[in-house]
Structure formats: structure tokens, C-alpha cells
Image (cartoon, rainbow, N blue to C red):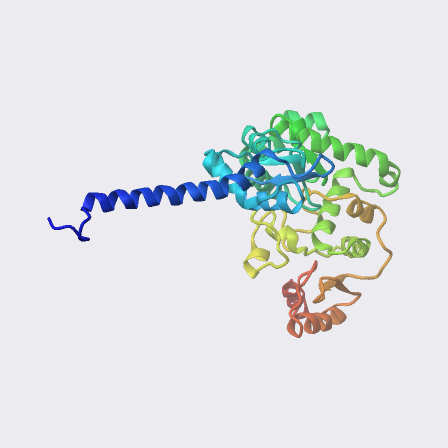
Length: 364
């Protein structure tokens, strides 16, 4: 073979290129090693900055690191992500809520994440969420399996211990933020949540309950409907008054959320097939209250049922801003429906327009 360059062999040229490659790599390592070493060995502060950050199941480690960088706990989210990859730890980080300070080195932070040394497992239950929605949240965040939680909600011994009648703990899981480090399994969480409901109710509502003429289950059932329908706290006593007025007159409650309970989460709209679905909870098809709560109400909704506004309202329809227009007559209600639904794209809340429209023509 001829030399590619006169006077130099191919092997000599190849050897020279290898040496050049090694030199370039060595220079890159030298350039990067300094900042990387500083990043690994020198924390950004002295411990004065503390951050509590959630790492949900399935979330991005890079995004988590960016939160730490923004909070002043890490110097560089990019270098932290690189370090985690080099350590093979990217897929081993455990979900939870962690607490870090700016005096911690990246290695200490990563070790906590991999070992699952969480500060707390915070789980917030929004007002009005049903047992099905809570179960999905628990499962999605990797805390408890959906079916395990639902089974605990329906446990006869657990319901008896909590003094709850009915088929499940629906309505008695108090909306709050819970630290799941204090519970070992789904039944323990249900006990914690029903216990919190019992404490809050005992502190605030026994005297009001005595004068209401309602059982506790009826109160909680109505409160769960108010919670699902209301957008603002100010409207809860008004919505409660509509339900009471309709009950006194023997009118069906026609509450949208009851039509989809146990089928799917209520998102503000129901379909014609929803309101025709024959379930024990569908207040388009049954008279009076459903057999039990359709969600877990907060204190304001319970108080609204025990202290409803005094009105002559029998109808309400959602305005475009989420608040409601309340009406005393069907004629006024239908005008509001035309204004907010046909004209402005609003949504019906409570007594549904489709059924009320049927009432005009004499069909019930």
C-alpha cells in the first residue's frame, strides 16, 4: 500500500490522530472537571435556605432539579441530572415530599431521593371529591392502589367503627391535607379521614344539627350536592335554599352531579343520556334525596345546609363566570337559560334545562 502522505506511513498517521483525540478528551475533562468538582463538593449555602418539594410518581427528575435550583438548593439542575445519569439513579428515585437545604451536596440530595427518605407524604383532598376521585389520586401518586382504597371505604367493620351508616364512607372523608407517613395502608387512611370528619363535625355542628330536623346522613348528603354545584362559597347557602324549596314543594331536585355519580367525575356538564340513566342517585328520576352523599363536603357546605339562605328560588343556571343566576319562577329561569346558555355558552347548574324545558310542554 502506498503512503497516503509522502514520507509518512498509514500507521503513523493513525497513531497521531489517536494522540490528538486523547489530548482533546483530556482537555475537555480538565475544563469540565473543575466546575463539576465544585458542583459536587461545594454546596451553594450554609443551610439558611430550606425547600420542601413534591416529587410525584412518574415526574421528571430534571424538572424536579429545576425546582431545587430555582429554590436555591442546587447550583445547576443540568449538572445534577448529568450526575444522576452517571450514577444510574434516574429510574430509582422515589415519589414523595422531600425537604432539602442549601448546605447539602448533590450526592446527599440524590441519596435521599433514591432511598425514599421523604420529609412527608402530603396528600391534599379537595372539597367535593368523591371516593372514586380520591382513589384515582392515591393510585396516580403511587400511595395506595385504587381498588384497595375503595375496598377500605366499603369495609363493614371500618364503617361500623366510625359510626357511618350506608354502603361506604362517601361523605365522611374530610377534605384536608394528610401526611401519609402516619398511615401504613388504605384502611388506616380511611380511619384518619373519617376521624378528622368526626372531630370537625363535633366541634362545629351538633347544636345546629339538633334544630335542623334532618339526620346527619341527610345533612351530609345535601352538603355533598351543594359542594358539587357551588363554585363560590357565597352561593352555597343560596343553592342549599333551592334544594330545600324544591323538597318542600315535592319537586325533583334535578341536580346534575347526581346523574353521573358512580359513572364518572362531574365536570360541569351532563348529557341527555346521563339524565336518563336509571341509578338510585339520579335526582332527575327519583324524588327526594339520593340514598347517600355523592362526594365529601367541606365545612362551608355543611354549614350552608344547616343555615340555608331564606329565598323563594327554585332554579339556578350558571353564568359565564361560573357564578349562578337564581330564579323564583320557571319563566324567569327559562329567560336566564336563553341568556346564559344560548347566548353566552354558560352551563346549567342544579335543576337542569332539558327537564325544565320538558315541564313547559307538560311532560315530567
